Image (cartoon, rainbow, N blue to C red):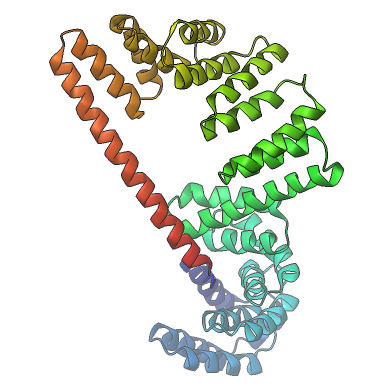
Amino acid sequence: MLISLSRRSTCYALVLMSAILLSGRTLAQSDEVTPEVQRLHTEAKIAEQQGNTRGAIADYQKMLKLAPHLAPAYNNLGMLYFNQHEYERAAEVLSRGIAIDPAMSTASALLGMSYAQMGEDEKAAPLLHTALASSPDDNNLQMAYAHTLVNLHQYDQATPYLRSYLERNPKDQQAWYLLGKTYLQLSEDALGNIDKIDPDSVTAHEVNGEIDESMHNYEGAVVEYKKAVDQAPRQAGTHMHMGDAFLAMGKFDSAQAEFKAELANDPGSCTANWKLAHATIELNGSNADALAELERSIERCPQLMQARVDRARVLIKLNRHQEALPDLVMAEGDTPKEPTIHFLLAQVYREGGKPDQAQQEMRTYAQLQREASEAVAAQANNAISIKSASH
């Protein structure tokens, strides 16, 4: 991906060039700034403004024959080569300029970006890092440095620069894609280390099961979770994983057994209580046993909104609509964009003789359902766009 120098850096290079041509930084430079050099500089600027890049390049080449120690001329010539995508020539010219004036920051930035475009990331990285110290909010420099770090597999170092860039450019899909790839690689590296340490450990089997679950390979997940349970049947969390997989597969009786086993290992787990109740509802419908499990879950964790929504659903099924209202109101305040809550609220208001409020909740429910469908479609389109861009 081509990364062009920002207008701010380009303008800075031209301003620096003009200043030094007029006053001179060193004795050698000052002696070389003759009227002929000044004339060539003026002609180069005019040529560049008129879009005659080749003419400007020729003028700078003539200048450097007359003034071989004039460092800013190398900077400007290198910039022109860079903008023409002639990165090898840019790198050669800029290196000569930096040898004369190592403090010329714009030349260092351009040289780093030239190396990055040429795929010479090890050379590019230190130059870009130094340039960013002077211009920490330069978008082009940040992205060039982030790309370089990713290419060098230095993912930890790349993420802060990508996050900083995205704070200023939140709609840059390519940057989000690169950040996602970086996090994915970090995750793969971390998970790979688990297998390297001990591929047959409880943790390794749980991680592999979660990966299978994420790909909807629930049968494979159950195989991995069973290995974890067999190794550590009394360890909190092992039965929870297995129960979650069974829930996703619709095997509610098996899920019940696993959540009960989890509660035997961790009696204080309000999440296990809730999931046990949820499996009971799916298997047997709303009943007193499910309600009792939900009560225990909410008593231990009153902020567990999923349990409150399930309790409201059970109470509605048991024709105890008004008792369901406080749970739904609390859940709506916590998650106002969840369509199911508004659907249940409509039922409660209708049963309570409040048709206007019931209709409003149904309208909200329908709107949120449409938004959810559109979001799924947009996410699919974005995934296609990002895939296409990555190729």
